[in-house]
Image (cartoon, rainbow, N blue to C red):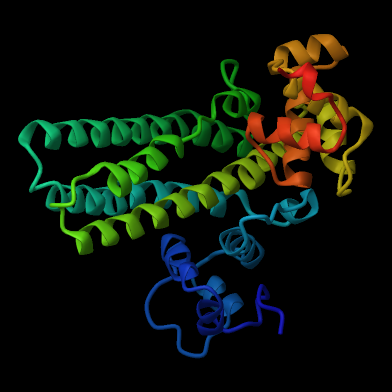
Length: 312
C-alpha cells in the first residue's frame, strides 16, 4: 500500500505516523475523518493534495529531501499556510506548555537557580520570536509579492538563506540542563515528561526547518525565475540536478567549506556567484544528508576529498 497517496484514508495515514495528526491540524484539517481519503479531506478544506502529502513525507522521514519535480507540483499558498500556523502553534501551545512544566520542575531549587533557568528559557523564547518574526514580516510578504509578480528591491530569497539561523542549539542545551544539571530533588516524573516535550519540539522544529529550506525556498526561487528575477544559472542547477552523486563542482565547494571558507570566499575563489554556491550547498545537503560544517568536514575527510592536515 502506498502511504503517501491521495487515495489512502486519513485514519490510515495517522496509523502510519501519529505526528501527522498535528501537521494536518495546522493545515486546518481537523475533526472526525470517518472513512474519507486524504484527497477528499484536502478538497473539502481547499488544500492541494500533493502539497499536504509532501509536508507529511518530510515529517515522516528525517532523511527525506523533496526533488525539484516534487516541489513544482506543490501550491505555495498552502506551504505558507502551514508555516504561519506552525509558528502560532509553537509560541501559543508548545512553548507555553514547556514554560509551565519548567516552573513545576524547578520549584525545589534555590530561588537564584530557578532564575538562572528562567532566564535561559526566556532567552530561547525571545530567539524563537525573532526568528519567526523575520519570516512573518520579511520572507512571507516577499513570497506573496512574487505570487503577484512584484519584486522587492531590498530583499530576495538568497538573503533569507544566508540569515536562516539555527534554532536548535539552545533547545539542545536546555535538554542537557534538564537531564544533567538540575538537582535530584526535582521530581523525576516531571523531568521525564518535560524531556519528552523538548525532544518532540526539537523533532518538530527540524521538520519545520526542512520544509522551509527544501520546499519554500525552492518554490521562491522558481517564482523568481518565472518572473525573470532569479539567477539563470541557479535556476538551471535546480532544474537539472536530480542525481544522488556529488558533482565535481560540489566536491570543490565541499572542500572549500571544510577548509573554513564562507560563501563569498568560495564564490570568489571559484569565480561563481554566491547564489550558485548556496544552491550547490543545498544540493550537497540533499545528497549526503549532512548540513553542519563539522559534519561536512568529517564527510570530506572520510571520503578522501581533503587531507586531514588541511583542516587542522
